[in-house]
Length: 265
Ligand SMILES: [Zn+2]
Figure 1 (cartoon, rainbow, N blue to C red):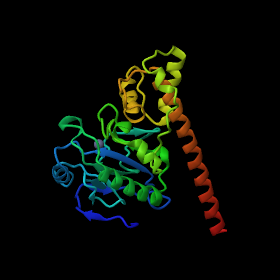
Figure 2 (cartoon, rainbow, N blue to C red):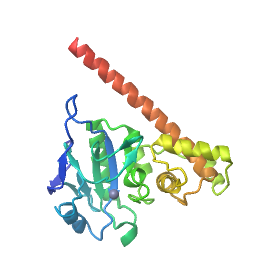
Figure 3 (cartoon, protein in one colour):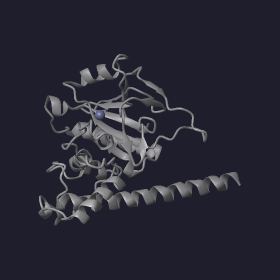
């Protein structure tokens, strides 16, 4: 690994990613969490406790120390019941990073600079090696919105996006003026369609959890689960960024396939 200093703290909580016919299993998703426990030490203990049956590939402490708990080739148990872009059981395809923070239950607080710098360095390393597309870098609450709130509205997604990790298009300058303003039935339907297109599981009649997860990440000033004018506009911005990322990932896949064909022909 490229100059990253990683300490080892092996967890027994992992299993096989299974055999994919084409060779090695596809690992092309990154899931970010907060630990939601009172200390980093307590979180490490729990993630390594065979009774707890939970784990992640990495844990990043508030001082920036990075621990490896599970080898990337193995399936860690961090996502649970999960959904993104039509896919479920996301432990199989993902790498999980636990970021130490007490979370909403124990005194949620900003993520300190050394910790964010370490998350950034680790994230860049993983997505370069694994070719993780930007639209497949998610928070736990994105993929399990009815159960989870991590890493939460204080997490600095814009900073990571500036470093090439995940999507966070800058909001149009005029967008905030639409906050709290109502939307019509057509705009509401379009907003829910955008939400699903971005990747969220949208349950008809129970759209609020996915909307709140979206807002925590992309409009953290207010996460009330309502589709106001600002949320609808923000959904369009993010959905357009996802469309570009999907197209770029497709093109890259085609290029790799052509390169492969050249080598075998
Ligand atoms: Zn989590």
